[in-house]
Image (cartoon, rainbow, N blue to C red; front, side, top):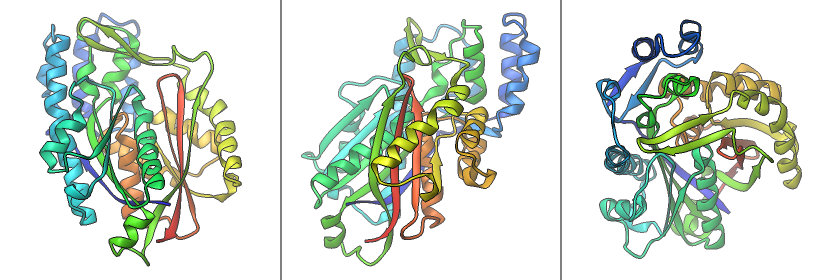
Length: 361
């Protein structure tokens, strides 16, 4: 078995309210994007109060940020945010960095070689012989996939401890000279942040004296790539960085296609939707949350944690679902025997799911 010990989160220093972001967009896109005035309702309908960026709002008013400038900012910010999130996870669990045997680092908004996990090992004081797995390109789905890879490691090696770190700087993918609707939508929802999670194997939990306590247990994971969907979500790499790819059909696809994928996954686990007591879903946007409600016939309360994270932090891509998981974990909402579905959608168009269960270690 694999057990979740703690989740830590971190946000960058520059806070931008949705009203400030809307005012920036009005100035920048006015006269350059058709129906710009009508599209401004996206900001008010996004159900976001504020977001956190790695650069001040003035940075986005300046053209000609090169790929190198953006990537340098990514590396600096990802290191600082990753360290902060990991340290919070260590503090919450009482685990020391040198105890970690395996680190998974997830990101899609920048590039680094050596990979960011190598930098974190040194800065956090982890052992230099820790195994590592950098994961790139899964976008919003990366948080769920990263948790699954970390949990699978400690299931294979039950006396080990794994650390997941997920960091994204979505804001700096903003393209100054791109006056398309997709770039406009990105200004209304994208944000930056980091999250970390510690996962222990069954033998490690016993050795650490953590038996007899209620914990979230990793049960299984599921990956699915929807056929002929490469155009739905991702990045186009341009001279000035990453240019977002958004298809307007995303919410409709979720409402129509996600339920059969989830039902197939649950069937593999000999369960069905009635066995789910909790949903830990990535809040990609207000319409995405609405699509989940429609697909699974959920009450508003069922996705309250997802809605709260979206309202307070925006869409941070891969760490966002881990922010939701942190709220569920800290609230002790998953009782022994209850199941929680963790899920997110990413480039491809792809789905990553994980089944969690409340259990006594």
